[in-house]
Image: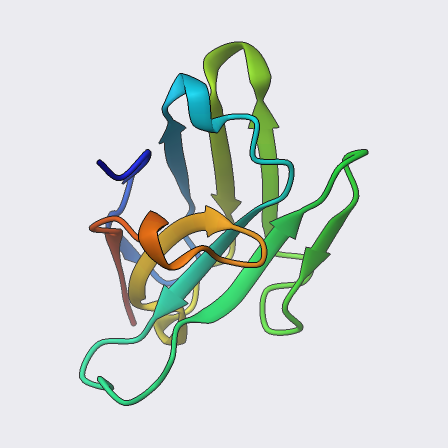
Length: 118
């Protein structure tokens, strides 16, 4: 059973915002480092790319293409990891996944679709 379930995606206009959530099953929230990844549609050969990561102690890392626009956070009381996405661009359109950082193959879930219209 995949311990990670993403939600919060949708259709938004360019410049808009979305907040993605990743519910982590209780036993799996001991995962120390979490990340958000994305895979653009129509590019099956393109690997999922790291968007943001949070490591023990709360330090965060962001891909250059989202710096200043996206924020990763976690709520330990709710066993949830979030990705706040602001100033969205059409090129942010993708399926977004959460996983450990570095990722664990068996943790990939269904992801959540984010579509940004121009």
